[in-house]
Amino acid sequence: MAKLLLNGAGLTVEALAAAARGIGGVALAENGLAKMRETRALIDHAIENRIPVYGVTTGLGARSTEALDAETLAGFSLQTIRGRAHAVGEPMPRDTVRALMLARLNTLLTGYSGARPEVASYLANVLDANLVPVAGGLGSIGGGDLVLNATVALSLIGEGRMTGPDGQEGPAADMLRAAGIEPLQLAPRDGLALANHTGFTAGQGALALDSALTGFAAAQAAACLTMEGFRANLTPLDPRALAAKPLPGQTIAAEGLRTLLEGSTLWRPGTARRLQDPLSIRNTVQIHGGTAAALAKARPIVETELNGASDNPIAIAETGEVISCGAYHSTELGLALESVSRAWQHLAMGQVARIARMMDPDFTGLPLFLARPDSGSNAFAPVLKLAEDLAAEITQATMPQPVWPSINANGVEDSLTSAPVAARTLTRITDLGRRLTAIELMVGAQAADLRGITADLGPPMTGLYRAIRALSPQIDTDRPLTNDMESLAKHIREGRLPPPA
Figure: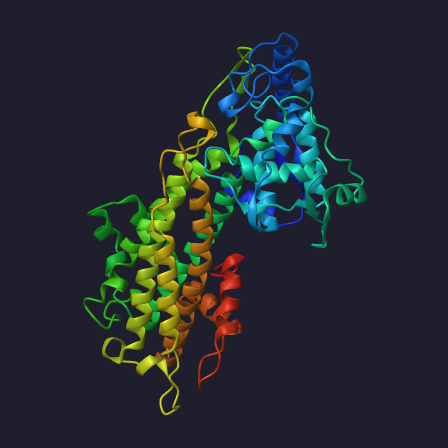
């Protein structure tokens, strides 16, 4: 497997997600390591000359006005990690921890942190060995992910726990040495560089956004299959109609829907059954346009976080300065992720409405609940309860993230973002959303069967219909549908639905 080349720039959501979810290693660009060497010299100069630098020659937080004596300075990096490794809760999934490490590794290569290049190389070695620190997922308020990052870093210095390539857990020191890696030895500044950054929120946010992007593609496809089964009127997708109010999100959504419906007989005049379809079908492009717009806005913000400094202080090679800043404060990132979650509620409610409309003979002209005639089956009737439960969970999760004046550091750190909550929330919403999309896919395929229009589908929808039927046969008699839905949701998560045209 090819290694992911990191240089502090150009890391995309998709590339990080693939590396985090896989087992491949990373390669470090020499120009990134060179930047780290250049700015590390500034840190060494500050130490040698007792120049006040936050977290290097001074204390942290409320103690930032205190100068560190020589004895304290020697062990301050180790103390920084030990004193902040307090994460609690269920351990973060392996892909989340790998995403955190990848995000931090890439931002180290910008050079702004002033950490030693050896720290970046060490992270790369651990990722190459597929060793993953064990850390609880709770402890960050978004002013840097200090507690979560420090708990991960505790394993890197051999004092926490790790899981190996086989998923088995053990003491970090033992796991590292079994892979031929000694625990990381810290120098001044290294501890804070490993703890105070936005790696968790950026990494988790990138994973969530990647899931949202694949989930949105599947939701677009499911809506198209509903249109096919319903025999919908496609004039709302006419570029001339959309040009009358060219909103950017609906333009993106409409282009995707038209591509998925390419070759369909629905484009022929007189094929649609109704002049005006229910709004959940007629306004799919507007409903999905809200999500498309939120995704388009979120991507550059997430990718800026993956490729930018989130340190305090930052070392600036061009001027030879080390200055304090607020780069760790993740307001824009949290708001961008939250906007995708809020938009997904609209998308989910459109799905529930379309699923319900497809069950109603008065709207479709098809059998009640899409049951085979004379089968005695209720077909999808009970699944409506599941769809509404999923929608309720999504709605609950889309509540605004809490923000208040923080009580931290004796009043010095009096602001927070709750961006980590936004990242975790979007992750949950996309997980729920895949299952709701799976229901719409099954309903659309059943409607196509009952209406006898599978030969009228264009190539994209034909490929989708066949992929669905390979995982979920049509319903002739009542049977449990859990495995069908979970299999479809898994294919969506892995980016295999919709299949390539």
